[in-house]
Length: 73
Image 1 (cartoon, rainbow, N blue to C red):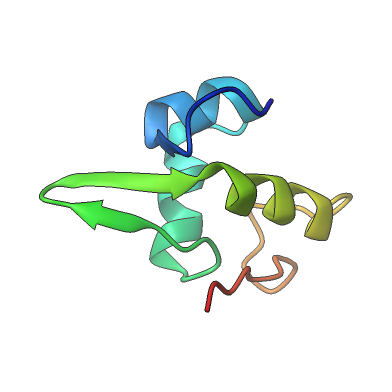
Image 2 (cartoon, rainbow, N blue to C red):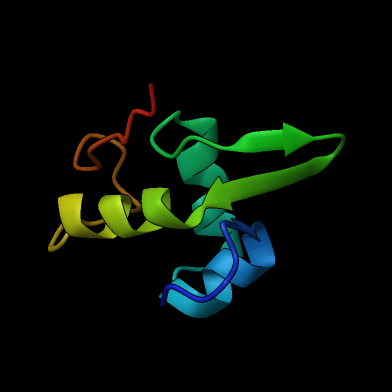
């Protein structure tokens, strides 16, 4: 998964993870997945995506109470 990109757009993240764009947007809205906002564009760091996938393995991402949040400090 780790290419030369440090961050992915919603569309790129959806393509490389298999998680739908609408689900990713919902995860961002629920504050479970941190993003960098550049104007109207949302970027998700590559390492954040990897951490999120590991943390939520086996969880239903459509159920807000099951999803574990990733925090970047």
